[in-house]
Structures are given as structure tokens and as C-alpha cells.
Amino acid sequence: MVADQELVDEAALKALGAMGVIRPSDRAVQVIVGPIADQVAEEIRAAGAGVPMAGVAAISAEPAGDAADLSPALVAALGGAGAIAQARTLAGRVRVELREPRRVDAATLPGVRGMVQLTSTTLHLLV
Image 1 (cartoon, rainbow, N blue to C red):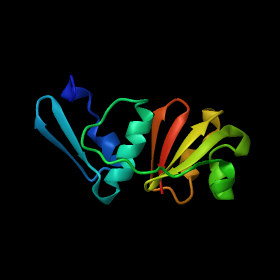
Image 2 (image 1 turned 60 degrees about the vertical axis):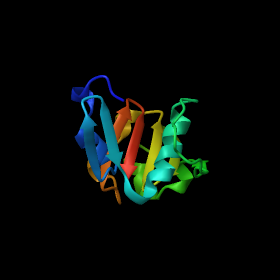
Image 3 (image 1 turned 180 degrees about the vertical axis):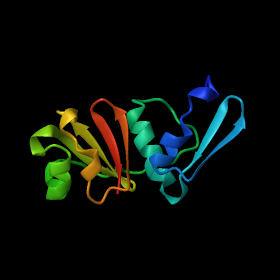
Image 4 (image 1 turned 90 degrees about the vertical axis):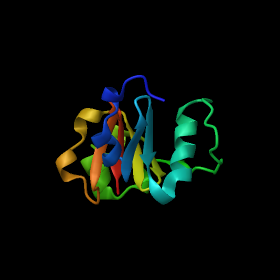
């Protein structure tokens, strides 16, 4: 349920890998993610810190990692290993927590099809 459909950023959802967005009513949004739906649901559940999601089966998420799990060229484009607090492989993307977001060179991210900045220090990279 959403309070305001105008605040739903369909382009950002698609940039994160959504295959489509359906708005069945003025208060509902369905994000179509395809075969990775279970993984995404688990990530949302984990990010929601206990917010219940009815009808979603639990699965285990992939483990968190660090800059060592990324290619050297990608680490360099993200500002170097010192600029990266954590990198986590998720369903079709990498979630990067940055210490120094100003150092990211978005124009040279190798192997990245798209990037969405969720917060000032959190990026999702489509790989």
C-alpha cells in the first residue's frame, strides 16, 4: 500500500531491475521482478527490520562481503578499497555501502549496466 502514487519512482524501480510496475488501485503498487522475486522479498524483509510481509516465503540471503569480492577496476571506480565500507552481492546486483561517496566515478564503472543511489552512502549496481 502506498499513501501517494506520485511518490513511486517507476524509473528508479526499473533501474534496480524491475521488469514492470502495475498500479491496480490508487493505493497499491506491484513491482514485477520475475524469477528473483524470492531473493528480493528476503532483502526487503531484512531491510524492513521486522516489518511483516504476508505470503512471502523465507529464503537465505547471500553473505555480505567487502571490496575484495569486487574486480580491481570496479573498486578503483568506486574510489578505492578505503572508500568502500561493505559490498554485498544480491539478486543481479551489488549493494555497496560507501565511506566516501564523493570518490565514485560513475562514468567508469566497469561491468555495471546501471546504478541507483539509494542514500548518500548506498549504491545498487546492476551487474
